[in-house]
Amino acid sequence: MSSFSSKDASTLSYPKSLLSIVTTVGGLAVFLILASSFLVSQPIGAAVHEYFYGVHHLDRVTFDGDVVINDTANFNPIAVENKENGVEDEKDQTSKPQDEKKESDAKGELTENSPQTTILSESNDSVAQPHPKLKEEDGESNNSSLQKETKNEGSLLSSDTRSEDVRSSSTGSNGINQTKLDPECDLYHGKWIYDLTGPLYRNDSCPVLTQMQNCQGNGRPDKDYENWRWKPAQCDLPRFDPKKFLELMRGKTLAFIGDSVARNQMESMLCILWQYEVPKNRGNKKMQRYYFRSTSTMIVRIWSSWLVNQTSEPLDFAPAGVVKLHLDVPDDGFMQYIPQFDVVVLSSGHWFAKQSVYVLNNEIVGGQLWWPDKSRKMKVNNIEAFGISVETILTAMATHPNFSGLTIVRSFSPDHYEGGAWNTGGSCTGKVKPAEDGELVENGFTNIMHEKQFTGYTRAIKKKTNKSAIQFMDITEVFAYRHDGHPGPYRSPDPNKITKRGPDGKPPPQDCLHWCMPGPVDTWNELVFDLIRRDFQSRQSNAS
Image 1 (cartoon, one colour):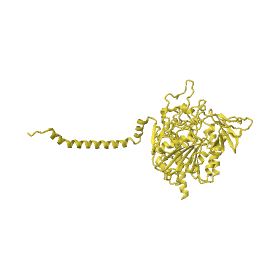
Image 2 (cartoon, one colour):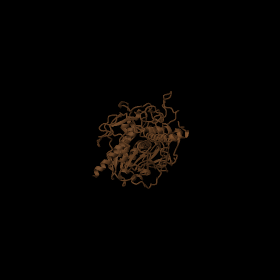
Image 3 (cartoon, helix red, strand yellow):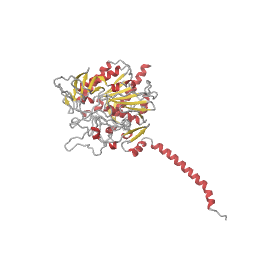
Image 4 (cartoon, helix red, strand yellow):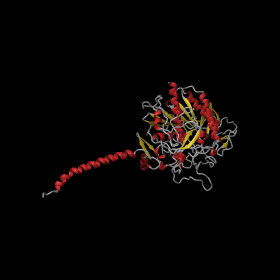
């Protein structure tokens, strides 16, 4: 029998060991590639983000060289509410938790029926009480002029009106066939339908969501308010498709201009689009700008609390420091950029509860929470001032020689303080589904503000001289039913915040004006999408 040494055994087994190693490494590599692709996809990708960045927010997100901060761990609602005219750092101002400019529900009223308001009288007294947190957003001044940027982004602001049919071919779980749309259909009469499909995004999948509208992140226990969709009576409103929207807006700019409710809507739009493509942040303290590279689409937001020009210098018997609103002069803080925009969504109204002096033709004609000379008759109150301002700004849009785009006037956004105003026991706590017809609380102030706004719109239409279009997006009645869609007491992530009524029945501080995200506010952008589609298709038809 021949001997068999360990050396011989080693020689014979080596090829087998090498083959085994190669096979194992190859298999592991394939597994890692497949697992990586799977993990970064939605919704698993969001779960991975949750694990690394936190359950309800992305603490730090970097994209295209820009850093966006959303540090909810250090969020102090009291400090935010008391912060006046601060200056945000340009690197993170577009998604850092901002001051909540919570407008007042304690406004002027023409009836005695609503417990939320005071009666508008013939006297010189003010007709509304200001909300203490209703103040100009940090770092966003109407009086600041932003130098026009030279755009080297190819067709960023192209006049191209390329459009495709953006109607969805799917049928939602609510049975709505979304393939047929009547271009003449009334979008603003219908009903809210529960849709198991769910919202268009999650609160933890959007890094630019202002914390005070992050209701789930702030501990709101119910979620059904996210699942109701608006169904017009005569047609269907398609579910928002980010890819089709960006294609529709190829080479174009959409601007949201106005108050904190405009911010609410703009962030909703970004959150929806973010699920398809992460934009590049090109904004600064004066103008938020998000660029979607795939279609050269820009989403812009400019702060303008009243949409008309404001000054603080002394004027006649009004001293320095008190805001003077020149009701017949549009706010140049954004009007200088109007030729660069293809679609503009305007939001205003709630700031007319704030202290201000009303000026027409350089003459003081009225004031809100300010009228020191009782011997003088006040000619214009805050409600009338709002109507004048709407006519002013829309006339400026309709007669601008270099603007041919689409202006969407989003109608007055209703609040839902029941049982009082924001500071007199008003509350929307416990509202978990849309109101039924018999549950609607009539709000006389909302009604007359809506009326004044529509009157200003119709007057401006008659003065139109350019090739632009103006659409009135009438959401006021539709959203009167959505008393469940506000943050209520869930305005901060503070685990010790008060969310229930006290022993005396007094409700906790709450926001019944702005809208939870995700939530009803996302419907506004589905309506915007449809209005843009109709306008673009109409222009194509007229041109052919």
